[in-house]
Image 1 (cartoon, rainbow, N blue to C red):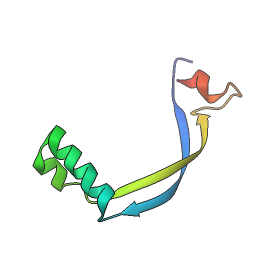
Image 2 (spheres, rainbow, N blue to C red; image 1 turned 90 degrees about the vertical axis):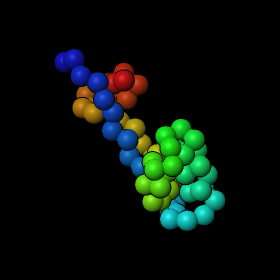
Image 3 (spheres, rainbow, N blue to C red; image 1 turned 135 degrees about the vertical axis):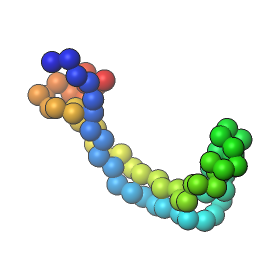
Image 4 (tube, rainbow, N blue to C red; image 1 turned 180 degrees about the vertical axis):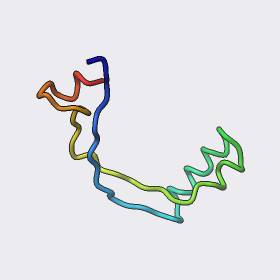
Length: 66
């Protein structure tokens, strides 16, 4: 088979619709993509990755699937 891919399992740790982190991301986005793009960002979300597996698991390990 000639496919590549992984599954990433995550848990949400926190989210924010205001605050310092959101303003920092908006500021960086404004510098890179413009003010209009920065205004479209509504929230920040932080995730914890707890497992990485191959897209189709034949026991080969995720690192051989990328």
